[in-house]
Image (cartoon, rainbow, N blue to C red; front, top):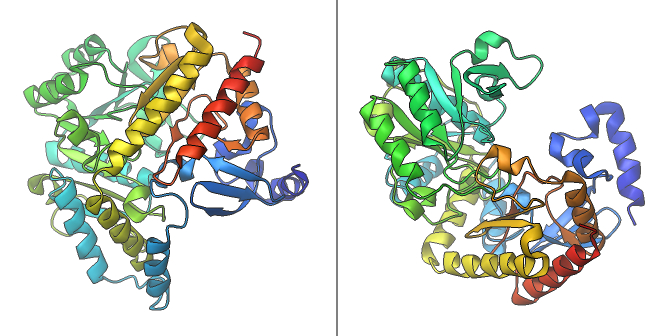
Length: 426
């Protein structure tokens, strides 16, 4: 039953573009009416019609402790009593910056912002300011937020041509954004060769999670580290998804590759609206007021988000085995799908991230991810939704596990996934 969700969606469409405040929520890719949620606790989320779901969206990643962790909620409520925002420095900002530097040593100095998009936009600006160069390389299929200069993809196989991926973005805004292919060393080398001395940075999701989960092939991240060093360019890891989720120190700890700059998203604030970017002191000293690279934000480092972030990161720090538990659950779910579907699907999984691709091809880049059958995914998604499993309403997103998903949750989900796959005609 979704009566209230349908009513709310109709109301929303009158005053909100598409009826949603972020496009994927519209459920357009799966041909459904979006569920309007009203509460979440632990591994569960409830919609306005009182339907209960086991949640594998986890607010698109930050919910590694599950929803409404009582330890975090207690600290946040206490912080609210002291005021929601000051627009002035606070002790909590210092504590969070110190904690980030401890857990992610490459982020010696960091700046708090209000979103992952803002973090990435600012990190790219810092890289350009530090190197004195204008061009950056990104990878097709990797999403780095909706700032103008990063909403691009490769044009008709021409790797050096960047076409805006959204109306309203002037071509001049993207002319310095070069697009390579994920896991393709040759495409990166070709861009460095054709733009000698002009590339400020390479930015990459170390594990791509916005074309579905796509893992870096062995040596690929090391290659990016080497080629940027050899060309006096910076390496930026966009860890908005992988930060504090893949390991306590993020993907850079997991893969033992150290970037020059790192961006983090909502997980650094326990799911609150926050982000961070940081790196070597010499680079971050370029940021105003220390240096000439301007970046500011009234709500940056607000006391509620920093409180939630400090408590969340402390919990993760004190329980390092959480990542082993999450890896085991992720592997169990991935294997259940493989056993049920065989060669008809591909499952990419690492830690608490996984994606089921409806393609027989190995998924290693954007092109292979895009070979997926979107109609089959929509049917699969609908079956899961109708049977109490809430996953991303798009083939090109990840499933996220949390530490409060119980063994019973996992068993239930695996069975429903098997049933869903058996119901499909493919």
